[in-house]
Image (cartoon, rainbow, N blue to C red; front, side, top):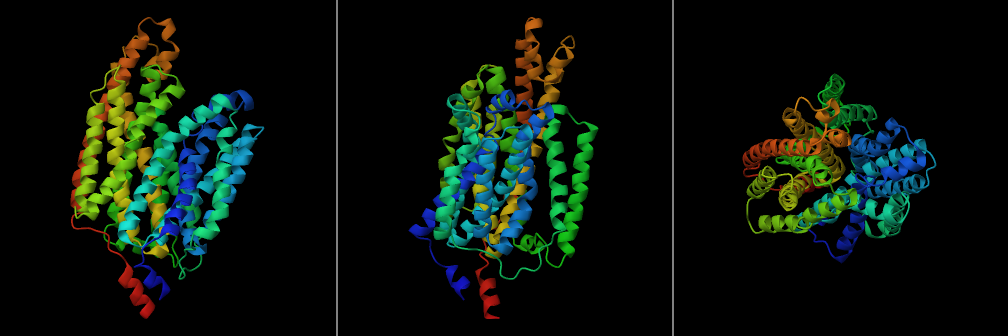
Length: 506
């Protein structure tokens, strides 16, 4: 009876304060995706990692995070999301301390892997607890809007923070900033955060853990490598293997007595479309970032820190995007129209990007801002739809599915749009250019001092590639807008309150 009656209560000051506490780990987890952008040179000089070790230092965090999201979301549903959050915060803090004072590349790689494990516990737990604390639909929508904005802004903020810290301190300081936030969470979490778990779970399905990782990691690895290396057979095989394991994982969830991801989640009208549209939204945001970050540094010839500071500007309107979208839905505008409009706005960002030249700083920043606003409008609304449709006791699994979809979408966006841009770049480069210059813009700039005029030609070719990718992205997101209008027609949040009351009454 307690669970049923609490579904109609409104959150007060305690819950909103707790939300502020939850935003801290979410911000840090999203920042850690990009926090090494400017620290890698200092790390390389200090620890002298091999090329392979340097790649692992950079990538292992995101790989472990993506591979364990579904496992940790399901585990939180069983043992309690607050408990898992506090365990993850302890691991994240300890790994941050180890990474800050790592004296070898191997130690830093291990620490980054543990950071990924901790991050995988924190992300679905924050959303699941948010679902528990904010049972009023209007308040939950506002809270999820804040969650979406913080997560999106954290990725941009991470690179800038690392640049500033490395400029004035040493590279380990980019990890030490995690400690105060995790300490605050460990102190205030037990006081402010409610426990949230599924009381009716069966035995944990351990076989699903390796199956989920075998499904996620090879696909994301292959998609991340394709933009820079091309459609190499090795990466195609990796993606194929991952998809085969994905089929096995789905079969396991449909046949196991206590599946990691309950197929009943997809019976809720609106949940499956939310997962698909969230993936598409991440496709657009991350696909554009692959080009714009290189454009700022290699085409406009700005330093890494300058590029990161300029890249912060498009994040400014993000703070207003989600609240405005939420306000429109609460005033009666159909959610399908708001989500469709978000995709149209994001597609408009790609259209603006398609007109960029080799000296179009403000136009590119405007395009990034429009893209980000459209993406956050979509993400905030479909996340609210998914979490409102999913029962509270399965909030961890639902959240982890949405976040795993974001990882897939981002990797797919970089792979497909990156491939378009690379193909145009190579077509535009003269046949007489050195082979290394025909491969990438970075390769061309590395040998530009030996070939007069090569840098100018390469920058123009890269900009042409970015324009081609932008046209492809605009077409893709315009199609997504049509898809959203069809899939979400008449779909609103259908609170699972009555089903819970009937279960309690029975």
